[in-house]
Structure formats: C-alpha cells, structure tokens
Image 1 (cartoon, rainbow, N blue to C red):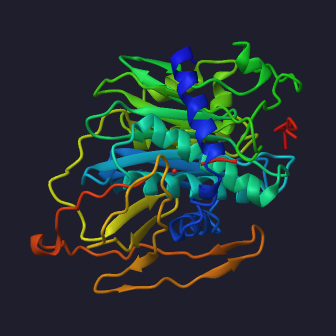
Image 2: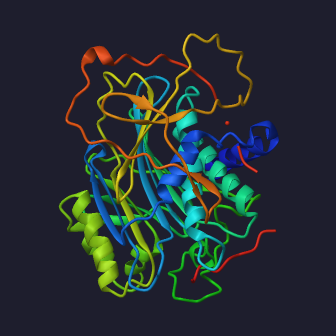
Length: 399
C-alpha cells in the first residue's frame, strides 16, 4: 500500500473512532434483511449470471466441508445524484472460530447497509465508501461476537465516472484480468502474504494477521483497479484460489472462459474436481460497466443477488424535509425495508435466526414481465448526508 493511501485510511479510522455517537449506524432494516437473506438454507452448489451488471456469482460447499461458511453478494442501487452503482463482496467465515457462516453473513449485511447509506450522503469518494463500509462490517461482527468469531472480506465498487476501487481484509483475494494476463491485486493478511511468499501450507505463516470482527487496529487494504473496458475483477475465497498455489490451472480457467458466467462455473467445478478441500466462492464483475442512468425507481431501491437467488429492498425516502446543517460526520438515518410484489408494496415478515441471534427476514423477488411505465418513475432528488468503527488473537483458518 502506498504511503499516501495508507495515511488516508488511517485518517478514516481515527475519525470513525472519534465519532462514538455513530457506532450503531449499520443497524438498519437493510442490514437485517441482507444478513437474514444470506443466512437462509441453500443448495450445495449455486451459479448465477447477473445480466444487469454483466457479472456472475457462484458458490460451492466443496467435497470436505459439511457447511458452507462462504457468503457472496452482488448489489446495485442509486446514489444521491441519481446515478446507479454496483458493489460485489465476498466473505469467508473463519473456521476454528465461532459461527463462521453467521459472521460472514453479518459482515456483508453491515457492509452493504453502510454502502447504501453512504450512497445518499453526498459526494464521497469510492475509497471512502469502501473504507467506512469495511469498518462497519468489523464493528458489527465484533459487537456481536467479541472476537470469538470473524470472517474475511473482499469487495469491489463500480461507479460511473469514477475509477473502480477494491478493498480487502483477510486472505480472500481480488484478481484482475487485462489483455490476456491475470494478477493478484490484494495482499493476503498472513505472514506469508505480507512477505510476498506463496502459501506453502506452513501453519504459522498461514495464520491471519487481521480479520473482520477483530475489533480495533484494523487496517483494510484499498486500491484502484486498472481501467480497461475488457478487464474483469475476480473475487475469490481460498477454496477457489488454492488452485493457483502449485499450478497455472487458475489462470488457464479464467483466461480461457468466454464470459463471466462460464468463468465462475468452471472455477468452482475445477476446485471441486481437484479435491474441494474448502468452501469455494467467486464473483466475476467488469471493471467498467455502462449503466443506464436516465431514470430511476420511485423508491429508494436496492437489488441484490447471490448464487441462489435475488432480493429486492425498498426503503422509505425522506421527502419535503428541511435538511439540518451537516456536521463533519452526521448520523445516517436508518431505512425501512419492505418486500416488493407485482401490484403493491407490503411490509416484510420476519423469522428468528437461532444460530446467529439475528432477526431473519427473507424477501424474494416476484417474477414478472411487466415493465414500469415512464409515469411511474421520477428522477431522484439530490439529498446529502454521511458515517464508523469500533485482544487481538491471531486465528488459524484451517477448519
């Protein structure tokens, strides 16, 4: 990480610690819905092409594990200026610690909810969105598990008119393809990774130096992807990129796949065929994506996809409210999530999640070919607002 970038991230972290009043800003209905949805029971394998984002997402339990503790999600929404954005995120619950799957789901729920809130808070840079969202995920997991559980997290944020940024904590990875080659952008938060070495199976060198849920002293890696219309980012858990350890199979699968859907499907299949020693999850997303931003939905709206289904969340939008004078870091208003149907909008019903203690609400997208007419859409009003963070034991992610 370059010095000027590191200074910016330290500044973000200090500001998050100073503003104690906003420590719970990630506790919104959107966070609860995303977390509960990602905690639902799913099939062993799932592959999904996400056509609106020209992306793909896949997850596989593997041949050894009894539970898939990976979570992966693609989300699109609109910012305060009416421009569409997309975010991809993958989390891998840490084996050997408590409730890895629940930690990964909670991390992504808080991460997405924070991105959603920041998207309405004014002209913040993509690196600030990612930085604050990662700190929110860390604070959310830590406040629930107090260091007894955690996960990794890698993410990418695509916005029109802005460079595509990526973020990383732990040993999940971000790769980029470009003109017939592939390289790793992220740095593993292990001793081996920090020394620039390949993970050779040495238990001591493969221990995580930091992870989502560790509490204080978190320093996320954040960087910029190279801008190329033909390039893709590939977010993976170690159940996929273990293929790159001792062979070039990973590179060959990626570079010889004709499209994101084929690439995601082939990666988890090859990972399983080669032994499937761990849960395998991957997202393939273009570095540059052309969004249609002429009009937007009437409601504050998010759409999410994982490898097994999709979710729509409509939040109440503040209208005709006199804005208060913003402070250096104003609190974010929680949004009220509801389910969407073909003809009407109704509040969603919830079910408790016993394993994680998080309220579970599943909202599935109703299939319809009906297209909204132009008179049912309006341009978004430009509104502005802003946001946090919070015995570190180094876990060994081997189980």
